[in-house]
Length: 352
Ligand code: SF4
Image (cartoon, rainbow, N blue to C red; front, side):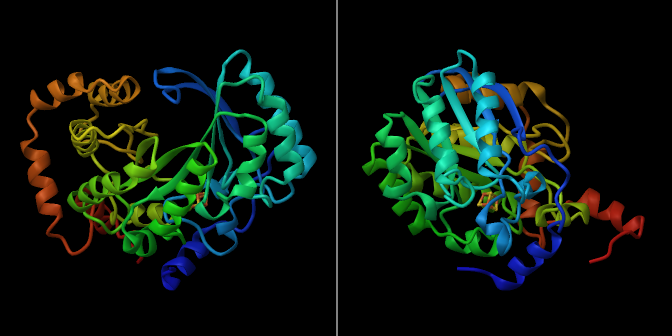
């Protein structure tokens, strides 16, 4: 289940010390639009500062840099103070998405006392709660406290890909498709919805292969999912993907590829959304030239599940160069970002 050399290398890139932080404050809180209740609506998002994902004790996923926000000294009291801040910030908003730098359902990261305080603080203030978790923490025992309080929840699970080779050799997730199936079935049995996250363009895959991997994964997770969120790669600090990218050995996916997947999913009646982080930026999903209209279309179509504007925009665009490049890259033995790789070679900064 683990590619040991990759896991070890990823671990070696992770910083040993944490940045100073106020343990009583969440990492971040903001309002955004999502459609967790069947239509676009204002959604409050909060990231708890925690001791971090249990996977960090061994390694990390190759694209995950959330360890940059953890604090090993966070206590139960701190987590309760953070809950107070979140409740205050929530105001009258009735939909809440909770992230941690790991798994909300991991009882070591979010101890039962702090978790129950959170549930008791929000249960009558919200109509929908989304929490994220690794597959192994999605159990009847960890879901029962949510069920007992009658909270309408969606459990978000990072599947990334349904191909176990991709999960092991590229994402370094320490999970598998069958573990996802068990977690999703447990969630459904307990009466909860499931959001499945898929990763567009894990390292080592060509863009063409990553599109196919994503479509195949959509087909396979759909029977277990209320909706599917396609997350195009966003390069975070101190990660394996950043290591490759800095050396010209990785390029984030193009917006055209994301549009292709969304339109295909819509044609095939899958409920797929995408709200890219870092879109049109160097570290996020981007075409060779920034395209704000395309990004805007992707987000609006995801929110409304009306894909005609995106389809019209794509059909009226010249994708000739994009198609050629993607085909050409598929023949490379390594997934270079040719422009960046050449620059690195010229400036002699390449040290592999
Ligand atoms: S399971 Fe989630 S939080 Fe943990 S390393 Fe992977 S992406 Fe990061």
